[in-house]
Image 1 (cartoon, protein in one colour):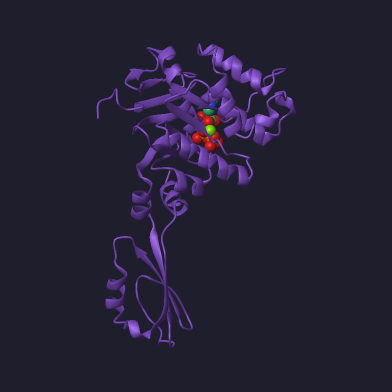
Image 2 (image 1 turned 180 degrees about the vertical axis):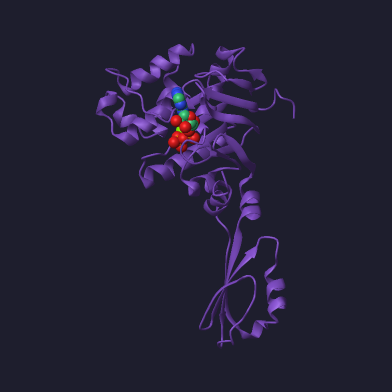
Length: 302
Ligand SMILES: Nc1ncnc2c1ncn2[C@@H]1O[C@H](COP(=O)(O)OP(=O)(O)OP(=O)(O)O)[C@@H](O)[C@H]1O
Ligand SMILES: [Mg+2]
């Protein structure tokens, strides 16, 4: 794929604050139409990377390209193509919700944006609150307003920094649905989240950042397969004599629990054990989760 076709390309990005290096040479690309998860523990460098993409911070070295253009060369072009939902909620003094969207529409040269803004307000369940000033909104409403603001100019690349932090479960589910709807309409999305269940559900691909370095990047299900084990619970009809097997986790009464590498077939395990299926009452296989893959990656050394 040419660089122009790529919504976002990050090349050997370094970002220092004084003598502290928060981002230590990170490279990855976000493909058209995907939801890409940028994951990592607190302080990993996620917001620092996003701040360079959205031109709030300058890179110390390396390059960031948005649809093929270096963000430092053409920040105006970048801002017209991206929507940015910051992690921090900002107060907007005495403006009401509707006025804020009008203001941002004006900033992007869209004076006649009523129809789009009304759609955004309705879709984000802010319609009934459109005449309220920011200080009259709840935390969840403020977060939705941040998302609404980022969408007024129909961005092609949307950067969501913790869009569901502090949001109740019902609203979180409706935001997931909305993000998927935006994806279906052709918007490319990069999001950060500490809810790994959310990343697992939404993201086509994820990158895991730890201490300013990229630890891994790939398809979400591929990484789970590569970095986690499957749990196999075998319920036997009758108890067996004590087993010894390298993948056996526990043996209690008639229940055996194994942890299998993703590449290993369950049949192989049964063959290994010389266990006949007629002795098996029940079998439960649980796939690994992103949470476990994440722990494997960030738990490794410094
Ligand atoms: N403006 C700044 N000046 C100095 N240090 C900063 C600044 N912004 C971030 N840092 C430091 O850079 C590191 C990375 O911070 P960053 O906000 O990018 O992390 P993050 O991955 O977004 O974390 P979180 O999950 O908590 O949001 C942290 O050690 C942080 O203290
Ligand atoms: Mg952050």
